[in-house]
Image (cartoon, rainbow over all chains, first blue to last red; front, side, top):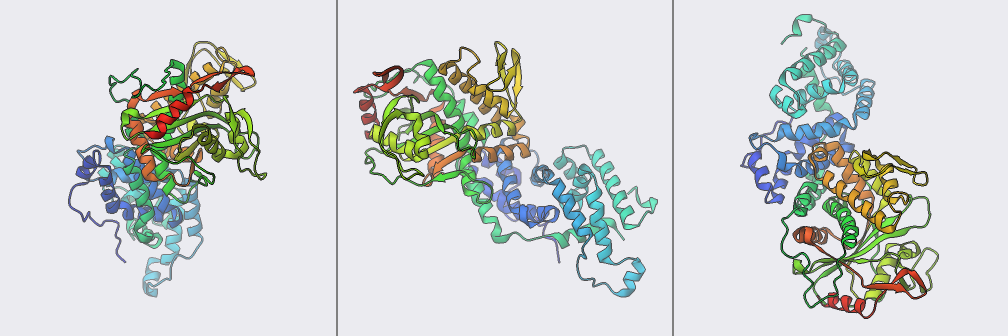
Length: 197
Length: 371
């Protein structure tokens, strides 16, 4: 299965140009919706499940629309901006998000298809490590989790995560380091040499 | 094993595809964009430069009475309604979260529609809480007259305690007998539809739509906006409204703001003073709703949208297109929108209450009907 989250814009025109045009022709904003709503839906469905994803994506675009006059047109790609909005809306659900990860940590995730030899080599089955991973996500601080998941699930770069979260790149890196250390510890990999990459 | 790779694998396991391309959410956005107004945009329109129209009387010499306080009263309700109109279209098309309440359309014999303008009944209601079942009163009743020529767009304010003939209204108990009473009782008698029927029967005007904005949602709106600041010339101590405020500037939460607009202990305790306070507070809310602080906080903005949707009742036919034209008409009329009192005089049996003055009132509505 290939993730479609990184699918590039298909319609011509930079996001910034669309947003600029939407200031005088508001209906243009729908093009931005067509471009990114599915991407945001998939992202939210990962973090909160499909039940709330639809409404949350709708709210994200309503908020974005109401704030389109304040969009920095010097930024051609609107994804960090949209991810920033959706991140703040997700924050309202952070308790249920953590509960979701905790529930996942107690369930077998998917049929284990790896050959026995690989599992033995890894020392732990894929399902078990996913359960541990989910438990680790549940235990992360909100800010750390946002940064880690914007990077790993939102496919944003460090700079884009910084823009989305409204924090300096240095803070992104330090939060990411902390989050990944905890995740690795949960996975049983405590090799300290891998901390500083 | 690379932790990021494992995390991405986990993400793919959890991922869902959106159903039918999120069509409902797309409609919701389109409705909002057609209204041309995120709250910030409606705010900007409200600050259109003044034209020379102030004080000019209506074409054909309508009996226009412009008094400063009347303007303030109406401005308050219009400010609230403008905020509502800016966001209601979006709320109406979203199905899942508590949408605006809807009432059935008119079932009575109605005045024929003569002109091309649209008349919308606006009611600000005083509903202690939706569950309390206590008497509901209309705190402000007005007609928004949207003419093809925006220069003839106006708001007709109906004195809420004016003594009028109330027709029989359908009610939960099976229907009420016609009676003479204060017009603000109509909401309690038979809900928004009873106000609607009464206003049509009194004015002979075809009223196309009806909107009720409840104070019950008012506190939620204020809280969603993070409070509202007021400047008081003197301290208030009103145990009845559970309100104690020092002189000077205070930031009120939702409950305090509600107490503040309803208190009769502040100022001279008159209806007039109370109306002015409501106007000032609602204008401050409108200003704040359009300010960056709210719009820059998505969670807060989403709460605001929801709180507004909870405090609105409309008729079923009031669709996005109509709301859009309402918002546009109010926007293009700008700060110079004209407010007209229904002509009144003291009621013969109780000089403290108003009654409509004839033939001036009939003449006003006859002119509006043909517009």
